[in-house]
Image (cartoon, rainbow, N blue to C red; front, top):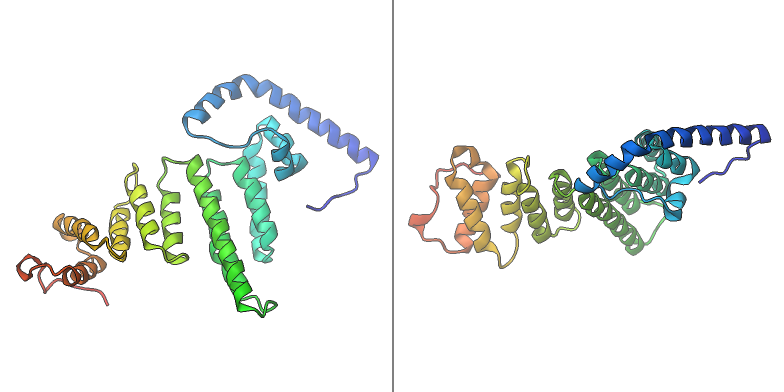
Length: 265
């Protein structure tokens, strides 16, 4: 992080500002004590006031955390992270999103965007790095960015275990980047089990399971149950995967879905 030299007058203004902010924070302490109880009930596992946090978010962020201005500072840092992304400064993007998610661990958007920048944008840049001639090292860097994205999503889930969105994002990461259908199925299923989850999560979990060697029977049963729920579930991909599994599992012809059912390519 860039360090700036501050003139004595500037130092005095900074001290006054810090005292004002801390004073305002003191007035809010009774309210924040009550909020702390609510945060624990909501699985809020956010910033802890210690030297580690001070190192992670810098002086201004630490003062803001003491004074209850986490949201404001997090928004400013989020904008800075967007600028760093536009300039492809991946190390700075990572640092800023670590600060943002530390300050606002209950924001789904921050965790999701952090993972997307690492596992999708930065990983593609690493793989296409024209300054690294060795393919093995480009693949290694790409994999490391996958892992950084996964770490953001896993920690986001720890702070928001009741929300389905980050489970979905982690499932997509396993499906599209790690090519791990079993883990993708697991996280789509976890998302589907939560209140407010979209109906497609259950289908996606079954789709992913259908690609897992040795679990075809389990996938077939799930897909067939969805099929029996009615026409709204009989989407092209579901029909296609069912027909593939019918052949693979040697389902008797009289128990198979009709041949006239539409299929995708």
